[in-house]
Image (cartoon, rainbow, N blue to C red; front, side, top):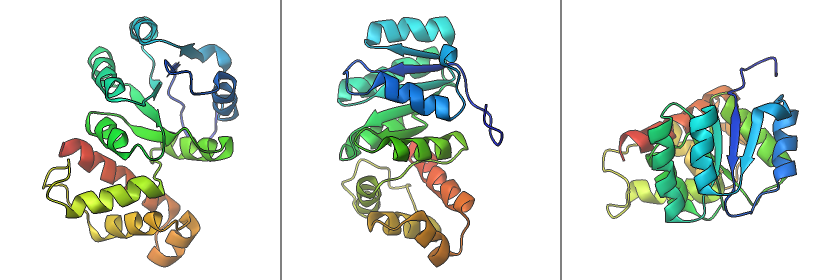
Length: 203
């Protein structure tokens, strides 16, 4: 177990689309301090549903590529509302990311990124922060200004949240944001997480 934060256990990885590397996911989780015997992997949704009943996983990874996968999030939350749910998506699937966060996903990770980036971003999530990528930052900026967007009119960004989204949408690094915004890494992570809370609250 890592020394600076507690790990939610047990873990369930649901990949009914066969798009992830089971071994890679296990290796990333092991590097974060997870013992292999606390990680389960299923490759179909029926088994996933039963596994959730059986082990009550506190951390669930769900591959999300279609709207039917979004519907399965409702089932997960009905079975175990307090579970931490991370959806695994393609970076350009901004609609799916939005819908997942609106109905209770804790965070998202993109499938098309390096193992190193996945490790770093998962570590941030486990510490209470959230991942954010250029495509989704642009999507949220545009949605916050559009009356046609699938986001409530009550979804309002404060100045810091808007600046963070704007900088991420222009590929700014976290170091650049720390220097320009005069915020700590912890504060930036907190603002991103608060944006996600607003999406859930105003869905």
